[in-house]
Length: 457
Length: 144
Ligand code: HEM
Ligand code: HEM
Ligand SMILES: [Fe+2]
Image (cartoon, rainbow over all chains, first blue to last red; front, side, top):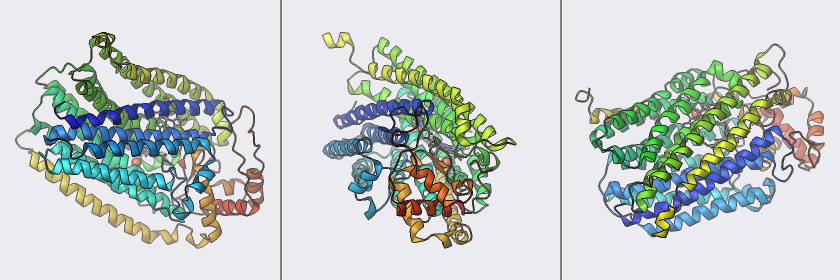
C-alpha cells in the first residue's frame, strides 16, 4: 500500500463481508421455506427474507465497489484521497442506514414500515430490489454523491488513467440511474419500464464498467503487463458493453405492455451482450499468459481468472439461454430467471469484489500475500463457493425446465402450486448446496484472520 | 493486430458507439410513450386502481408473487389472476380475506393482511386493470 488514505477501504471491505454472510443466511432461510412452507411463518414471511437477501446483496456489492475505489484510486492517481474523513463519515452513514433498514424489515410489518417512514409523501417502496423506505433511498443518494465527490476530486487532481476514468464513469452512471427509483407513476406499465432503467442499466450497463476497471487494476498489478495493452482492451470491452447493453434493455420489454417491436430490438441486441463478457475472459487469460512477473498472491489471481470465466458463464451463457423473445415467452419469471440471476450476480459482481479484497487486504497489512496455508484455505473457499453456485444454478435450471413444461408448455397446463410440489426435489438439492456455499463463505472469512505465528510475534 | 488496431480507435468506438446507442434508446423510448395509450389500459386507471397499486406496494406483494412475470417466484403469477378467478371480484376478495393467520401447516402460506372492505375493492380493481394491459399474449395460458 503506497498511500495512507487507501486504508479506509478496509472498513468497507469488512462491512461488505459481514453483509455477505447475512445475505447467505437469509438465502438459506428462503431455500428452506421453498420446501417447508411454514418455516418461520408468520414471523419471517418469505417476502421479508427475500428483501433482506437481495438488499444486503446490493448494499454489500456497493460497499465493495466503494472500498475498491478508495483503494485503487489513490494508487492510480498517485496522491492521497481527497478526504479520508469524509470517506469514514460516509461509511458509518451508509452502514447505519442499511442496518436500520434491515431491522425495520424484520421488526415490523412492511406496511407499518411504509407508514412510519412516510412512504405516502413520495411512494417508492414495494418494488422488487427497491423495497427500501424512501428516506433510505435519499440517504443512499447522499452517500453516493459524497462518495463521487471524494473520488472525483482525487481523480481529477491526480494522474488520470483509463482505469480511473472508466471507474468514475461507471460510478457516475450508477448514481444517475438510481435516481429512476424515485419515479413511481400510477401507471404500472410506465413504472415497470423505468424500473428497468435502474436494474438492467445497472447490471448490464454501468456496473460492467466498474467490473472491468477493478479487474483491469488487479491484473495490471499482479501480472506487471503494459498499461497500453490493458487500456485498449478496457476501451473495447466497455464499448461493446454499452453498444449491446443499452438497447439490450429491450429484453425486458416483451410482455409488460410495451410495443411488439421490442421483441426484435431486445432479442437482437441482448443476444450480443455475451460478447463483452467473452472479451473480458479473453483479456484476463491473455494478460495472465503474458505476465511479466509471478505475484505471490496466487489466491487473488485465481479470483481474477474466476471472475472472468464465471461472469461469462452466468451473464453470457445463462443470459443468452432465455433472452430471445420466443424462448422468454415460456421462461419469463420462472426458476430459469432465478438460476441466471444467481450465477450472473455471483460470477460478475460477487467475484470481482472478492478479487479486490483478496488482492488488497494483505497489502493493507504490509505484506504482498498471505501465508501459504491461508492462501490454500482461501482457494478452498473459492472452489467451494464457485462449484456450489454452479450446482445451485444447474438445480434451479432443472426446476425451471420442468416448471416451464408442466405449467406453460404441456397440453394440460397445471397450476403453479401443484407444479412447485412436483419439483421440490430440485429445491432440496439447491438448499443442501447452499449449505456448502455457506461453508465456503466462512472459510473465506477465516482465511483473513491473522496467522497464529504472526500473533505470537 | 496490435499496431493496426490502436488504443485511440478503441476509445473512439467507445465514445461514438455509446453516444449513438443512448440516442437510439431515447428515440425508441419516445416512440414507446406514443404507443402506450393504445396498450396500457390507462382509460381504466381510476383513483381506486391507483390506490390498489399503493396497497400492493405497501404490503410488498411482489416479494412472493410475479406481476406480468416480474417479482418473486414463490407464489403464483397475479397479472392474470383476475381472469384465472373467472372474472369474479368476490372470489378474489374471499380468497384474500380467508388466509389463516398462522398459515397452513407444512405449506407455503399467504399472510393475513386484515384489509378493510374498501381496501379489498382497491386491490381487486388494481388486479383487474393489470389483467387488461396488452401484454402481447403473455402468459402462454391461464395458469400464468
Ligand atoms: C452480470 C450481469 C448480469 C446480472 C447480474 C444479471 C442479473 C439478472 C437478474 C437478477 C434478473 C432477474 C430480474 C428480476 O428479478 O426480474 C435478470 C433477468 C434477465 N437477464 Fe440478466 N443479468 C446479467 C446479464 C445478462 C445478460 C448478458 C443477458 C443476456 C444475454 C441477460 C438476460 C436476462 C433476461 C432475458 C432476463 C429476464 C428473465 C425473465 O424474463 O424472467 N442477463 N438478470
Ligand atoms: C447460497 C445460498 C443461497 C440460497 C439458498 C439462495 C436462495 C434464494 C431464493 C430462494 C431466492 C428467491 C427466489 C424467488 O423469488 O422465489 C433468491 C433470490 C435471489 N438471490 Fe439467492 N440464494 C443464495 C445465495 C445467493 C448468492 C450468493 C447471490 C449473489 C450472488 C444471490 C442472489 C440472489 C438474487 C439476485 C436473487 C433475486 C433473483 C431474481 O429476482 O431473479 N443469492 N435466492
Ligand atoms: Fe437485462
